Amino acid sequence: MRAPKTFRLHIGIFGRRNAGKSSILNALTQQEVSIVSEVAGTTTDPVEKPMELLPLGPVLFIDTAGIDDVGDLGEKRVAKTLAVFDRTDLGLIVTNFQDFGEYEQKLMDELKDRDIPFIIVFNKCDLHAENLSLTADFDSVKVNYVQTSVATGAGMSDLRQKLLRSAPDDYINRPSILGDLVGPGEAAVLVVPIDKEAPKGRLILPQVQSIRDLLDNDCFSVVVKERELREALSRFNKPPKLVVTDSQAFLKVAADTPPEIPLTSFSILFARFQGDLTEMVRGAMAIDQLKAGDKVLIAEACSHHPIGEDIGTVKIPRWLTQYVGGKLQIDNMRGHDFPKNVSEYKLIIHCGACMWNRREMLSRIMKARQAGVPITNYGLTIAYSLGIFERALQPFPAALELYKSKSC
Image (tube, rainbow, N blue to C red; front, side, top):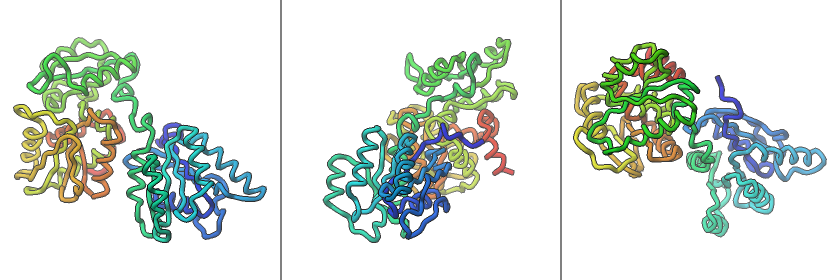
């Protein structure tokens, strides 16, 4: 089912006639959505294009008529353009260095007054030299801008990155971790192993966040260690809607959880909550393409000191080696360090990124996608390597269908 407009990020595209608004929209969507012509005023009514803009997710682009339209009919077109502000979450002001002036400033002021984030798109940069004075002014007051050329493709990747970084926090930071999978009045069982890396006297952040999310969604939360799961399930008069485990205990928990009860891991929940589950499922499926000697990057948001059988430096490399049947070249990175050029890797495996906002994780997914490198996360990697991938995707119908369709 397509996401309704209510749940899409609305991106309004504004500017003068013939500034290249429709060309920018077509380039972003990689489709001929709007008619492009040298004749000014080709776009009359706002043109809407719903789409999945990876890795942002569902968006609605709104291409508008030129704000400098003239005449009685032009005034009506401008009125319709101005009405689009009412439903814009993020604005694009398309212009060029030669024409930037009062119309563009009015658009900036309108968006600022409404507290709508925006990006100035200096299009046709292959035809117009940069106005260094103008960009210096923008830099000094931190106005977001990018230089593009639809004709050459220059700057389009930068524009996509700007869209990602400029999206409002309430869209980027999705509200639910698992409450929507459980439902009000229903129960989830959280399996929490207590090992050397569990903070003394505390739970790790994904577990705490999951408990809070269940409470916020009026769900019941039952927390057990892995050896207590079978007994806990036997005491339910009505089966729980979901069992969630630490990924490292996947095999035992899968064995102790009846097949009719959906099962997944905290890490896989965070692939959805902090990233793009569909993209990361595709990434996990790329494990089948790995060969001995291939380079794999394992990236972790936290900068903690590894202890004992650390998951990122010991366990995942071991499971991957067993699955591939040969030694891999594995690089480990922590914190905000990330290679500028990731194209040398055959696969990127990321932690759940529970310490970050979603924007930063999506940015890494986008970098991997642009380089043509599959990316996945810890929980999906473990489930795939251990042969329980389909079971772990049971709570996510779209992701499960993707896996089934690709594995046939």
